[in-house]
Amino acid sequence: MVVLDIAIVNVALPSIAADLKFAPNNLQWVVTAYTLTYGGFLLLGGRLADLYGRRRIFIGAAAAFALASLACGLAQSESALIITRAIQGLTAAIMSPAALSIVISEFKEGKERNRAMGVWAGVSAGGAAVGVLLGGVLTQYLNWRWNFFVNLPIGAFIVFAAVQLLPHRIGEETKKIKLDLLGAILATGGLMSLVYGLSKAPNAGWNSPTVVGFITAAVLLLAVFLVNEKRSEHPLMPLSLFRIRNVLGGNLTAMAVASTIFSMFFFMTLYVQGVLGYSPVKTGLSFLPVSIIIGITSGLVSNVVNKIGYKPPLVAGAVLNGVGLYMLSHIKVDGSYWQDVFPGLAIFAVGLGMTFVSMTLAATTGVPKHISGLASGVLNTSQQVGGALGLAILSAVFVSTFNSDIANQVQPVAAQVHGYSNGLLVGVGLALSAVVVSSLLIKNNQAGTSEATKND
Image 1 (cartoon, rainbow, N blue to C red):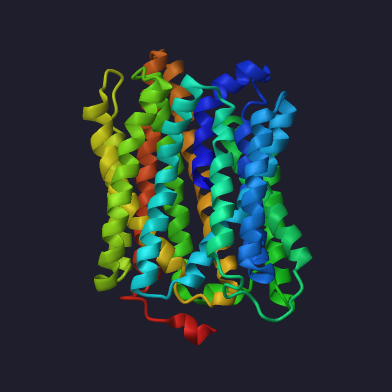
Image 2: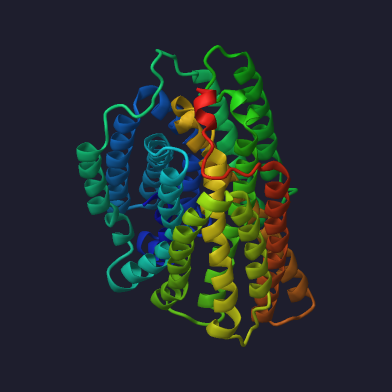
């Protein structure tokens, strides 16, 4: 529901703009408001689950997310939609790490957790593709408001199932520990400044005072946050977490992998709709194979990890991501879906299925149960920041290429495709950075040697 909601709204943006009479400069805030609060509050959300009960936090956040979705669907003005989208992102930031920490705590390291992570990874990685399809169907045949209303029955089912199935205590802190409020303010402010600065970079330029100002503020706030965490008696994010080598390597790899995912979906959605002329529904259907391939691959990899560990599929998956992006970079103005899009998309999807399972296992294996919510928040934050960073870099490459081609009197459509192609080629470099990081930092773990016991 969380991952899907990031993608589902993109398809509906033109309809939202027309219905609510959005000013052109404000439409981006429908997406930005959600990503800002989601990226900014993930660390705090993970820590809240550790301190105040994962079941309680998860159920409350799921119910709040559904209500925020209802408010989004009922919005009658651009300001109302932007505000409710920000609230929706906040509730998602609390719900998501609580959910992952429940999985980490309830399934023992080894075969049980590997299988559970296979399911988790398949759902997470496939959510964006399903979002594009569902968003297209709902927008074309019903109304953009149903892109939000669809969360109501899902949220109600989640709350009902959680009340029935989840135990009351799931490995939380047993000691009474105060929440590090200063750390929470610094981390949230720093992450929100970073995500906003990166989101503005493609249009405003990296030299823009706004971009430079927000990124500088983010660096300063996060630096003070780290100093505070080192001195705090009960830190929001104990820095000892990153002494676990695979946690560090897994998060850096997740950041690199996420930077390719966001950009690939962004560019290819624009190409399929704007150049190939697909309708919203047909565009969604064109990405459906991604979800199917990821689901199958994730299930297979969760079994393979039991035998060979999670490092080999992680490295191999990152290589396949790079290969898929390289193939997609050869798109043409007069191209076709089956020849120019599907082959690269399929290989990229196999790589995603392999990397999502293995990097999630790497980033959470060996983490003590009482801080698994925090570890989940850190992993989600790495993916969110990586996605924003990748999209900012690749969009800047696209804009630079497009402007250069237009100045040289290249046809606009050809300039667009050339820009997409160059952006995807830079994405190959980001995928290779995931290969390097995972190769150098991650220590292989076969069948889940239980470091968590030692750390506890």
